[in-house]
Amino acid sequence: MQRVNAFRVWFAFSIIAASSALGAQDFRPGFYVRADLGPAFTRSTDVKEFIGSPSPGRVKFDTGVRFGIGGGYLFCPYFALDGETGWIYNEIDSISGGIDADARVMQVPFLANAVFQYPNPTHVTPFFGGGAGGSSSVLDIDATSGSVFVHGTASDTVFAYQAFGGLKYEINDRLAVGVVYKYFKSGDPEWDVRRSSQNIKFDGTETHSVSVTVNFRF
Image 1: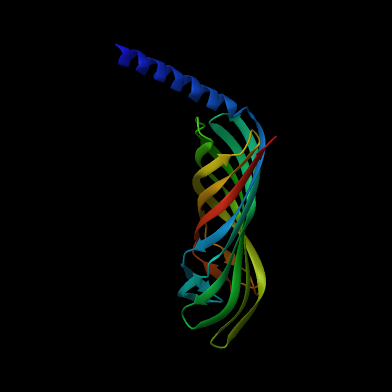
Image 2: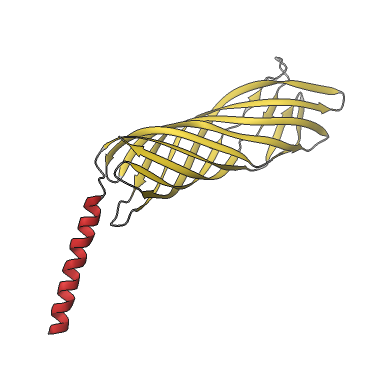
């Protein structure tokens, strides 16, 4: 009987402590801003056209950098909507098919996201979500393919979407830091570098990134 009573006391104390800890974290609705920074791993993709030459090969990217910034509204402890932009920058390592290139690609996404999180008695809050929108893809290139020389900068806007998830540590009622993984997929960009009908076309790109994130609530 004493063990049963002791268990009841321990159980009641645990519930009170958990409730107090959860209440100590103020997950009130409101506006917030966030930013993240980390390496960007963009996978190789096909070159669909290079100045009139169809499907000459594949393009390989060096490891780059992703920076994101956004803001939104926390409607309840578990759900928020926000908007995001930033940039994903990658140098081009090589383009197969006899193309000698010094080039780089910067993607500037503009996305609307749905964010889900799980507040709990600890200070560590898991979250995940996804979003869709567009991406402005900018190509800066100096390249030679046979007797063809290409030099210039051009941009194209394509459809894009992402999925993400991570953990954040609630330092106080307003500030949190954490880590976030993002998967980003963009459509097929086409760049009119020469301002003619002979363009450069890539297949869509996929980028994986792991970033440090900072979140501030007002």
